[in-house]
Image (cartoon, rainbow, N blue to C red; front, side):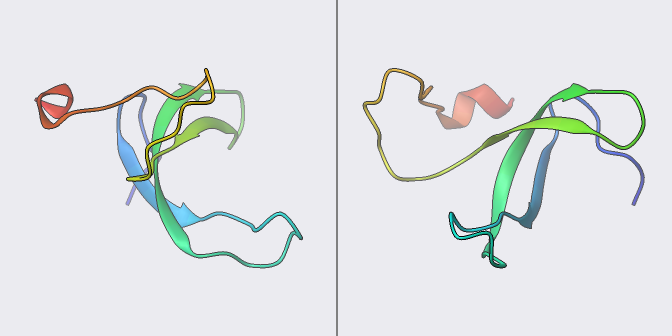
Length: 62
């Protein structure tokens, strides 16, 4: 598997708040930075109303 590209959904382990290993979770690649760095947006099925969340529907992946 190569380097993820912007717009791609990847699955990788996200650390818990106590910085221990977490579960593998999906994330959207938002930006590809210099080197091996990426900016990701975590994806969840849990509805949130925190003002920062963006709802996605199946049509968003066409």
